[in-house]
Structures are given as C-alpha cells and as structure tokens.
Length: 359
Figure (spheres, rainbow, N blue to C red):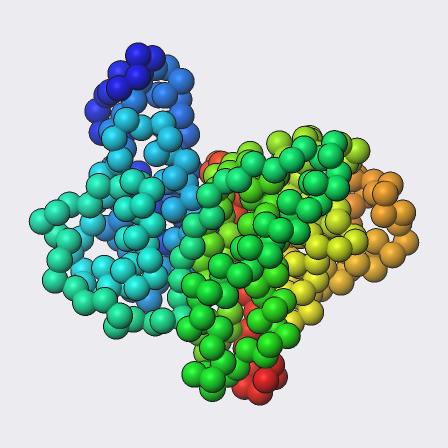
C-alpha cells in the first residue's frame, strides 16, 4: 500500500453484457468516476469487476477490448489486482481461453479469478477467427526531430502489422473460408489496424489493446486504449486546429491527416469497402458511414486543408445528439455525446463480407 492511500470497502463495477461499446460505457462510467473521486481523496477501494452477466453470443470484440484497456488503466492505481466476479460457464471460459483473454489478464496481472470456479472447460473448441492482442507503450522521439519521429512511426507500424499477421494467421487464412479475404483487403485491414495502434502509443501515450474477429458476415477490428483521449491529444499537437470539446476533437481528428497514413485513411479504407467506423473518446461517440463521410469529403474539396474552420466543419456534420440515435441517424452516421464517459480512445471498424466480392 502506498503512503498516500488507504484501502477502503469493495467497489463493484459491472461491465453489463459487453454487447458493445455503448453498453460497456453505460455500465462502467459512473463507478469508474466514483473510483477516481475516492482515489483523489486518498482512499483506495477494493475493485470487483462484475462479469456475471456476459454470455457467449452476446459479447462484442469492441467491448471486450475496451474492458481490457480500462482494466489495465485502473490496475495502475490499485495495490492488488481487482477481483473478478464470474458465474461458472464453460462456454464463456472456453471462449476467453481461445481468444487469449486469460493469457493477457495473467501477463498484466489485471484480475484475480475465483480459483474454485476456474476449471471444467476445454480450449480450442470455439471460433479460431477471433483474437485479442496487447501492445505495450513505447516511447517515441519528439516531433522536433522530424526525421527520427517519422521513422519511428513507420517502423512501429510495420512491426505491429507483422505481429498481427503472425499471431492471427488463422484469421487471415482465406483458404479455410467460403467468403475470402483478398490479399489486397488483408493488407488494407492490417495497415489500418497498425495505424490505430501507432496513434494509441503516440498520441494516447498508452498501451493499446486490439480485438479482431472474422465471421461469415465480415471483419471487425477494435483498437482501444485508456490514454489521454482525443481532446488532450489534439491540443498537444503543434500547429493543429484549436478544439475545446471532446466532440470537436474526435471529429476533427478524423480528417486531419490528408496525406499518407492516418485516421483519415483508415476511415477512407473502411467506407470504401462498404463498412463503418465507430469512434469513442470519453463521452463522445462518432459513427462514420458512407453518407456522412461522402458529404464531409465533398465539403473538404472546397476547403483549404490547412485552414479548416472547426465551426463550419461541425455544422456540416450536423446537430450533436444527446439521445438515442434514430434509424435515419444510424443510416447516415452521427455525432453523439453521452451523459458520462470512460477515459481513453476506442475505435472499432467493420467491413462486411459478401461471397466472392473480395476474392
């Protein structure tokens, strides 16, 4: 125990059913905020992560990845690993074993599992096309040394890409699938994923967690961290546009890099393949779909790329939602602010797969 904190009673934090990023944030935000308030007062509650409501078939890779990133952040402020409250369910445990969740939790000392429940399940029986990965934070040269800084980004992007291809070989093995990933699309997906990891390491100043899943419906990739978030990162970039709210930061970050690699290229790639991108930063949520992205693209053609008006750009996106999106909003894309949020950045993209379209 540190000299500045004293351990207090248990603080349960339910993750809900982990159905998606919204479900995860809705269930955890308030209790995480409470933990922070107690910690600032010099107290340290015994955290209990409540995972009893999760079930196979309902967990999304995005929410699992977000949970690991959040648990990693919180673990840095606890003397002992938090307790995991689980219900014995061999199907859930088998799934977690097969996607490397147990391995990551053990390696990073994130949780203490109840020993009396951890048994009676078989590994290697669930979908091999799903995987979780962890990328530790690495320190980069400062942007004042531009050449070394660019070289670090290029080298790190390539290293991450190679790790993804090596550890997720079954996921990208098109010979085993009726709906195949072409070599070109595999390249685009792995580069996009690597770019998001580089952003987390560089701008989020945090470790990154990655979740990948291939199903007959398509490919889902999630990259999550519990770092600075878009607002702090944007205001730390020299020469960038001035933003004052999370929703401005998450939107403007999407279009900044108009040359080479970057988040803008990731969104371009996903939308061009008929997919969607969901971005979260603290309480701000942004859904990019083709109608909204195309509308923004048309507007950007009339603007100077180095002199974008944040006010005009936000007006072009449309009204910021503070409620459940309508069906029209979900079809077009939308920007939403929730009542409470979770620290860090969470980006998930989905590319649908149709038989023969990517072979």
